[in-house]
Length: 205
Image 1 (tube, rainbow, N blue to C red):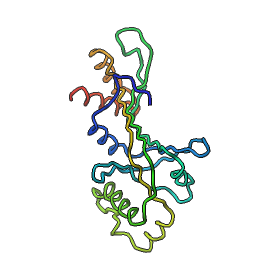
Image 2: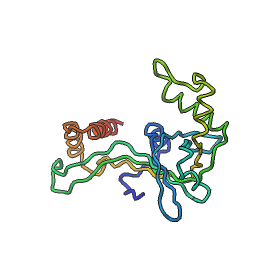
Image 3: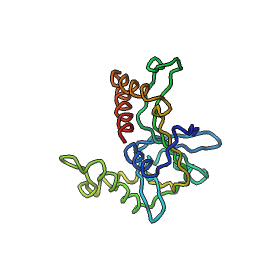
Image 4: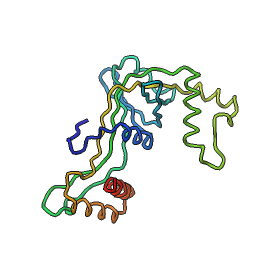
């Protein structure tokens, strides 16, 4: 990923926090030099001193069969993004787009059935624990779980390289920056509203 120096993120804690909060990602591999992509909810886990991305996909999805032949798997995480009009600047310039993105590269392997069960247990806990009637692993019938497990393949990706970008108008002067935030709040678009909130939080860090 091309990242100008203004927008490069190097704080690993910030990157991990972003990955956890924006965990619906895109996995890219290749088969006979053709890119294949799947969009999935993923988890970040740590085993000793090594970080992994874990998840699962349908058994019928051919992408998992490319894990053995691909030296590198690319996982892309994306946060809020919004169009930035140059009419919001003091001086004449061109429009642009603000965004957050993290690219993770690594090698993938298939989870054992026991590892997959553990991963699914954690996934349900993450998204269900705060709900009134949480659907947790131990609440589901063994018959249903056995049937569903036959239809999926679990995997983990050992993280080897990370690239992270926050393009949030850091290269603009203070007046432009404040004006961009205010104008984004005026937009009727959810992404623009989220970008305004994010830029405001960055300003107050």
